[in-house]
Image (cartoon, rainbow, N blue to C red):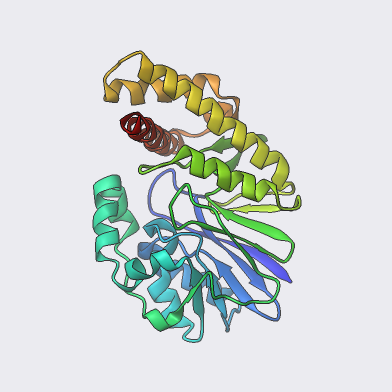
Length: 296
C-alpha cells in the first residue's frame, strides 16, 4: 500500500500547514478526511496531479466543516466513491444547513473562511456499523464530537482528533486537546483508552502530523487531559467570572503544560491560531464542569 499525505493550502495566515488528507493507494484507493469547502478545488487538483483516477472510499472521522466540508466537490470528481462515516452524521451531510449555522455560532468568521458545505446524496453514504471493507477497522471514539470515528488500515491508526492535535515545531513536539463545547471528559477518556487498547502502531493525525508510536502519544494525551481537568477545575472553584476563567486558564496552561511548551517556537500567526483553539478547548472543559455541577 502506498500512503501519501496531501496538504491543503489555506489562505488564512497561520493555517499552513494545518489541513490535509491521507491517501492510501492499493487494491482500494482510500482517503481520510477532505478539509474545508472553500479549498475543495485545491484538494481535487492535488489528487489529479498525483494521478489518482479512482477513489473508492472516503473515511470521514467526523462531520465538522473543516474536515468534511469539501465532500460534495470531491464526490463530484469521483462519482463511484462512497463515504464511510458515523450514521449520526447522515442528516447533517444530506442537508448541511443546520451544521453550518451551528458552526457560525461557535466559530464566527472562521466558519465563513472554511465555507459552507454542499449537500451529499444519501446513497453515497455508508454507515460505520454496516461497512465491510477488508483490512479496515472502525473504532467509535466520541469526545471531540459525539459522532467521531477512528480507523485502522494498512497497519496504521488514523485517529482524527480523538488523539488531540499534534505538531512538530522545529524539533519539538506540541500536543493540544481539541475539546470544543459540548464536551464530556469521561467519554473522551474512554475513547482514548479504546485506542490505547489497540496494538502500538504508527498514528496519523487529522491535522498534518504523524508519529511512529501511537501508545506513547496517546499516553501523553491522556495525561494532558487529566492535567487540564485539574487546572481548569481549580480555576472554577476560585469563583472567577467565566471569561476570566478562560483567559486565566489559557495563560496558565501555556506556562505549565509541558506538551504546549513548543508554543514559544511558533510564528505570530500560528500562535494566534493556537490561542484561539486552546480557548475553545478550555470552554469545552468549563461547560463540562457546569453540566456536571447541575447533575449533582
